[in-house]
Amino acid sequence: MITDEHRRSQTFSWVDPAEVLKTTSTMSGLDAMRALANGELPPPPIAALMQFSPVLVETGKVVFECEPSEAHYNPIGMVHGGLVCTLLDTVLGCAAHTTLPAGTGYTSIDINVSYQRPVHSHSGPLTATGAVVKNGSRVIFTEGSVVDNTGRVVATGTSSLLVIAGK
Image (cartoon, rainbow, N blue to C red; front, side):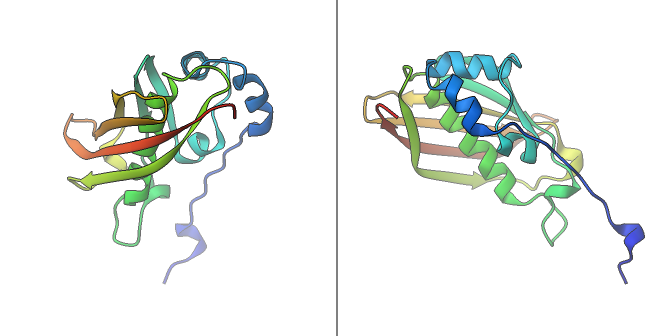
């Protein structure tokens, strides 16, 4: 029987994303991502919730780290694949974002993720890299991977992203 002594909790806080958008909407994607990585802008709520943050930002490439925990576990005793998919979706989108001018946005058209090994709370930090494969004015193609703390690939992914001018 599970009792209260087995319960754990986690709390997080975030800044109103609408307030951050007022600042980032006037910045190029590269400048916005650099400001986020440098701590000049607060992280978006999803990053606080999922425990990931940017560690490298270049034109067409980003690297994020994520610290998986028991809070990310599924019923079969490992980190839910949704965490890794969300991490990949983030780096794939942010890599595309670094190529966009101010006032231009994007949205995912698709994402394809291939899981290669399980992730546990002791697998971290996870390092996710996303890179632009083909830039475009309408669609951007990206690819990426996630590795565990031993450098083993746990998942790879690709995405195509729709460019939205004048957001």
